[in-house]
Structure formats: C-alpha cells, structure tokens
Length: 233
Image (cartoon, rainbow, N blue to C red; front, side):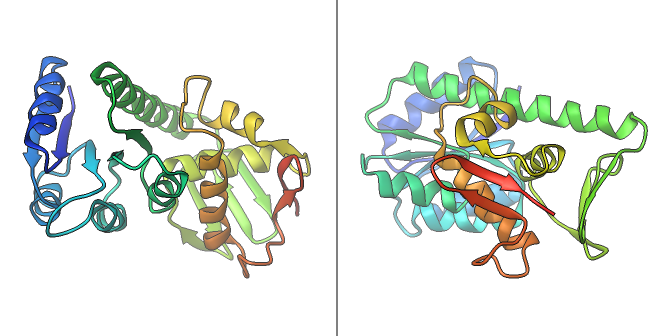
C-alpha cells in the first residue's frame, strides 16, 4: 500500500482515478487545483502523485517543477495534449511517466504499479549495495561510492536521484564503450519501462549539469552520433 496524491480538476476523472487506486489498496488524497495540490504534497509527502497538466490556479508543470525541487516523489503526468512537446517538457522537469487523455484506467493503474515496483526494487538494491563490501568507481574528479551510495565531484557530494545514480554507475562500469539508448534503457530502467528512449536523453542532461564543468561542452558523458552515449575519463 502506498500514499498517492491525485491532482485533477475534472471531477469525474478525479473520482474514477481515486476509486481505482483505493481499490488497489492505496491511501489516496485529492486536490482539484495546483495550489491545493502543492500544499497537500508538502503536508502528506506522498509516494506518488498523479498530476494533470492543465490545472486552475497553478499549472501542472509548475507543480511538478516545484515538487521535484523539494521532495523525491514519483510523478505520473496526465495530459490532454497529444503533442510530443508536452510529453518532453513533462519529462524534462521531472515527471517519471505520462499518460495521454483519453486513457484506459487499466493502463494508468499498470503505470502506477510499475513505477512503485521499480522504486521499491531500487531501494532494496541500494540497501543491498550498502551492505556489500566497499566498491568505489573513480574517473577523474568523479567518484561513485557504492557502499555509501553517493556521488562526489572534486571531493564534494553531488545530490543525484536514484535513476541518475543507476545511470552513472552503468556508464562508469562500461567506461569508454559506446552504448545505445535502447541498451541503456534496458539495463537501467528494465524491459517493462514504457516511457521511451527520450528519458535517457533527459537523465543524461541532468547528469551533465551536475558533473560536467561545462554541460554544453561535456568531457565525460559524450554523445555518440547515431548510437547513444559513452563515458570517458
């Protein structure tokens, strides 16, 4: 059972999503506008937020951006727009997945359960790694300490999200290898992930912003044209 917050201004969709989540055994809170949704997110610290893109008082994108800067919560974004740009923006500001309206309730429930399951497995893996013998990967000023489950650059801790950590570890364990987006997606996100390879590009950009001296001219995480990426010393 997880704590889930649903922020949706369409009452019929809000009630239907809430009903189905409760039927799955989750505790559900609801809000019908962005301001109220953000307040409830701060108060409840939910495990996952189902967030509509178009909301009164405060847009879903603004809510997503603010929530992501404050807490490590999973976010599934609902959008009535079938444009690639809306989906990309949602992923770029921190959404973990998206569902385009109209959607089947079965699909939404499957996406929610998949995210929660991957998050649980990631946490269990992190706990397992922390109990294992010390393992440190070091490339230049970048150090990945698997025992402490942390990343440092020039001796300073760098805050990274779980998937950013997993992606960096995969890169550093395959130093110098050209890795395709599909290969990275399969290794880091798993076979069942349905968000598409665009999420790899988004996470690479986030890592570059945190680890590269000049993210616009990266020296470690390089783009391999027509292939994907490689990590070099």
